Image (spheres, rainbow, N blue to C red):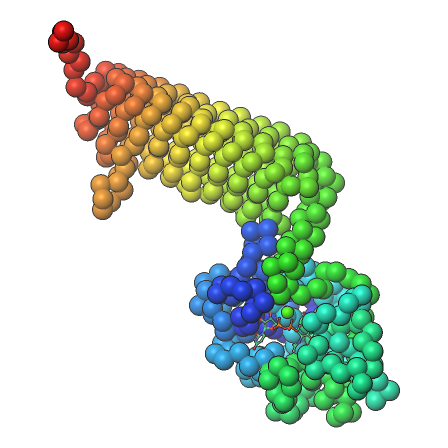
Length: 454
Ligand code: UD1
Ligand code: CA
């Protein structure tokens, strides 16, 4: 916790180098928007003190972070990082912070530890303007750190002139700054856009502060790859790969068996218990938990699911927002959609889709079915090709199937409809009326066998 320090994330840019209309900070890394990683790193340091400048795709960014939206400031025209800071400044001043920690929205690998280390050093030397720097073999498009006898400054790649600034050293600006509000405020109106980018650069504050006799500091983080910015698809995938490897390594340490680990893509919020087995290639994202003894085969896509102990997910399944109870077996080729709840030892087989339905203990739906808005009682058997006709074109309706009912193959259950306990539905039926407990319902055309014409 750093008292008196507010945080500001710069997230208004378009991300031109991504060649996409979507705001760059919402592009995902292991299923989470890039910006979420930056907010997560800030949360332990400045709880309730995080602000962000949004602009390009602002409404989408607000929607993605409803809890943070209070601290958002809009930069309607994106005239550069310095301009973004100018736009946010009054909000920061009104909150009475002594310092503001400014972080670019496109450094998703940054962690709370890295930021805390930077803050400690910058605060210890009582800097007015501090920034984090790293060393690269090739400084590329990054802002370059120039340490002259007159003081340190940052020169953007576009404006770098070897004649004037000397050969580039490889020390670059990571896009993380600590600014003292009282002393930096008067410098903001001095920012100019008379540069190659025609933009107002936050980085110019370093040189301006030096000239004004303020204390400046470059906090060198060595070769820390966690501070690389993500500007292009290639950089995004590189950051994703780095994070992915770290997560898989962590799972090994916790006693999870990850087969084909180089192709297991598991998000940062996924919790896997020791003793579970997960096989790549797979994608497991969001708020997913996997219990001990659970086995997740390869070729699955999972998001926001609870997989309880000893359940088994066979290959080629797509699971989202579902709960799979202990000992259940799902797939191969099954789809569980949001609100699918499988209680203990239920079985969902190939080409079965389940949406917003509860399958109670021991239910079997082995083949080729759609169960939507249904409550299926314990021990019921759902024959191949059973369809709940839950939608009448305007509204969704419920299907209730009692315990130990048996639904014959290729049955259409036209909802709303209730099938009683231990009832039996003949194969090929179209069921439009309730079936009472223990009864046999047959709703299909009768077969006639006619003599063939010779
Ligand atoms: C910036 C730095 C560069 C540094 C690099 C580190 C400047 C001028 N340059 O360059 O020195 O090495 O980061 O990764 O700051 N943004 C806004 N409003 C704007 C423009 C940008 O909010 O008008 C946001 C972007 O959404 C992004 C961040 O600021 O999250 C940085 O902008 P970007 O265009 O990526 O800067 P770089 O060229 O990478
Ligand atoms: Ca950048």
